[in-house]
Length: 409
Image 1 (cartoon, rainbow, N blue to C red):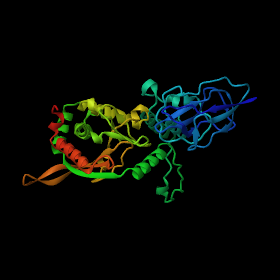
Image 2: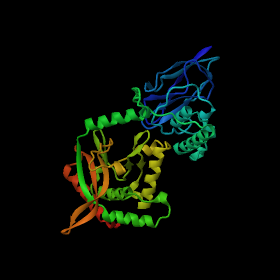
Image 3: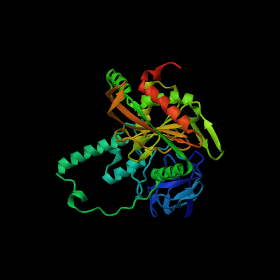
Image 4: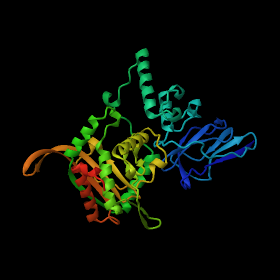
């Protein structure tokens, strides 16, 4: 008998350590070569690691949320003979996973189905065999929509066949739920750290401007009336994106990132547009690369694609990095004013608030107009208040007279 240490490989992007996301095994399990053993969390993704050997698990590196250095032992196996040298590098591009799963027993064959660990966890909890779930993603990958659709269908069939009724919630019975402790790991930990760092290090300058988008909304509705595909209908976001892109050509200091290690401000030529997207796993910021080279329809299509990919966990690492400025919107929950936190290392973020009809004095007459606020924050170390206000005023001019967005420069 001998011991074999499965050491944490380099997961890319210069990572020197990684966080344990989920264990698929426990001490005492017999593991076969190629079995999944765990997921390790990077800043943007969860990488599934498979065992390079067969043997008995005698030691694990820690619990979910613990940090393991690259080159340190993740799992120690007891093997029958000296284990052969094996590559420990991940064999597939990692899928983004933003909530860790609870530690459990060694995975069954369903763990080899192409999907995310988050969906595997839900499958375990629901007693669903993922081999039976049809996947519509790339290469037959099971997306969140695929799993939810299958679970809803299977649940309805089971309820009809057995006559089972779901148990009442604590609220219905008058029993208050017990206190629950939730360990802050994975994406939620990263969000917390980044928000705290951004608020602590960046002197935020927030500027709010009211915009009359009556004409913009009329144009949007007209263009949508010509499109028979409801999935391709335009939202206000791509119009704002185009207006922002044009304004940044006049205010390049806002299309910038700050490298604090080198104390260098980098002004970017291309606009790599971050689109803050709320998902069931937390806030993600997928990126439209080279947004300045896209037309209205192309920008709208790309925003839809990356936002959906962020929600169903099919987003890639590259699509979650490299943004130079971010747009954030709470949609119908947008409120009147917000104070968006800058997405480091960027120096500006544009927040979209709710659009409402209000009486407005226009040319000496009271008229009902569709009004919307933009709540924007800038890094006051690098963007002067005057320049921030002037850029927002330029965006306002284009959104209030949307033909200007499409005029040649």
